[in-house]
Amino acid sequence: MKKQLQRAVWISLFAALAGAAIAQRQRARSAGYHTAREAESDSVGTPNWKVEEGFQKDVFTFVRIKYSTGGRYSRWGAWDRWAIDFPDSDLNLSYRLQQLTSLKVDPDTRVIEITDKELFDYPWIYIVEPGGLQFTDEEVPILRQYLLNGGFLMV
Image (cartoon, rainbow, N blue to C red; front, side):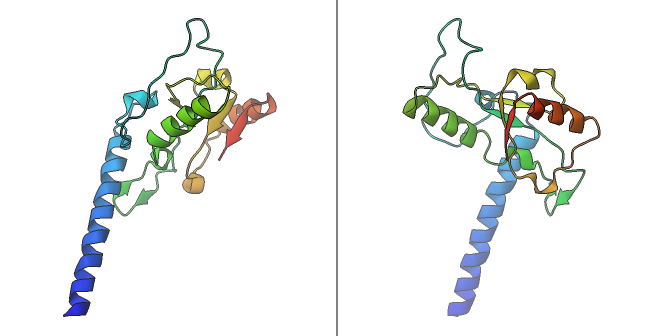
């Protein structure tokens, strides 16, 4: 009886975690997001701040790269790995940089693809969960040029 109860608890816990993960991915998958503020955050009370007028381009901006996993699928369907912890991690890092350093930080983080023209407007980009990442023939020279120009990629 005790083993059956333990098994039921584990199955329930697994089902709850899987459901939460699927819901997060569904929210991200439908994302045509270009900023973290457009996405629904799971965090409670994420502060909002403003960038002084005239300095919108003179601030640190968290830029997440949206990418394809080469058509691979997880157990639950298409897996948008680029969106893991989005937008919460983006907002959290941006807020903490604003709060704890002298950097001025844009509260509106960005989501772009490597092929987007505005890539070169941002000196820092972030790729999360690149395990299945496959760069296209079009993306490789763009990313190479970005890095040779002094861009920083955090993986």
